[in-house]
Length: 534
Image: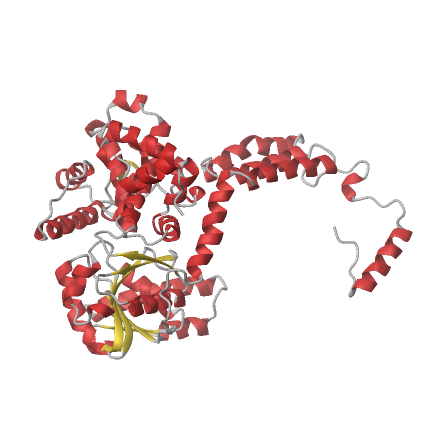
């Protein structure tokens, strides 16, 4: 591919002329008679064997959602069987098909234009000077708190990691040490750098060590009273005008801010687990949160190298609300008699990273119960009425009647043997599967239910003003809950489907499966005008 190197334009021309003079009948290797492809052409016996199974291996990875890898393989195999010019033509045609295709448009629009807009500060209030944080307190050294401490310390900030006991705090610090040891063992970090990062994390059981923090993030258990107690304890230790943030995933920030003496400096910073791998942070603005606090919280999220999306306050905010519809829909399908393997496979084939029953086990059914009970208690205390989801009865049966609490307990929808692969709990078939229904259900219906229910809830969040922008909706849905990336996000899924066609399909699903699929007023308004969400 390269015959000679030149150090200037004139030298290049001189060498090119000399090369032409010296090689009047020059040919590329592949144009020479008798040329053989390295490794063998597609019809070579050894290569033909590999190509027989390659499409299946590829499908296992893409689940059929991403056309590019399939076209690349086709271009390589077909192009290798013809001359170079025709091979280039084959590749060009496949490329043109891809670049003008809907999946490329979905992903380019979201992962390039919308993500760049967010990273450029599109959601950050204007007129507030950029802040650099120096000392951050983290309350609670469980997996979330430990992950936040690691992400913060590794970006040069001093971290105070507080737990109820010094032993608990040290255990949280060990989480960072284990991650850093892996980096050192892989040659991605020096021992000196590892020691420097660990030296920034102070494990403690004393609130006095929080003195002088610019920002304190609580990551304690999802309990309103507990969160109120740690807020009252830590807030006085903040520097003047310091920020207090909650990592709650469901409890409204306005409700939690009642425990604060400075609600204007109180905000939500919802991280995702595992924090060291998940790139998104959902910033939640309470009723009294100031624009200055929002701007500074935005700065902190960018300082630790994460992607900030900004939402207004609501129970479950945006990501937890939408995530809840995903897992509940899967559990609801099980209650209808659909086979669990069909449910989880439908999730994967729709483009989700894992199926709804798998992720329910990983989150833990007991945590889902607790979050629901806390939400129900708060809603009823505020004079509201709690509407039960059909999935709730299945969760209660699994936990209360059968002791199936989730992956951490070794028993959920799946069995987790000490040796061997996980597999569905055999009793699920006896308890829930209706063989006639299981045999008749259509895969496309299951995939639609999984993608539509999340997209519909996302529109509700836009309609209620929980979401401020379509960009935050798309980026938040993909990076926060793993909404099928090929779609470009929950709102782009609606746009590419066709807004009117989406609304019509949602009505069909509502008739067949319940009012939760009914199109919100905002969706109907856009459908009537055939106006995409922008």
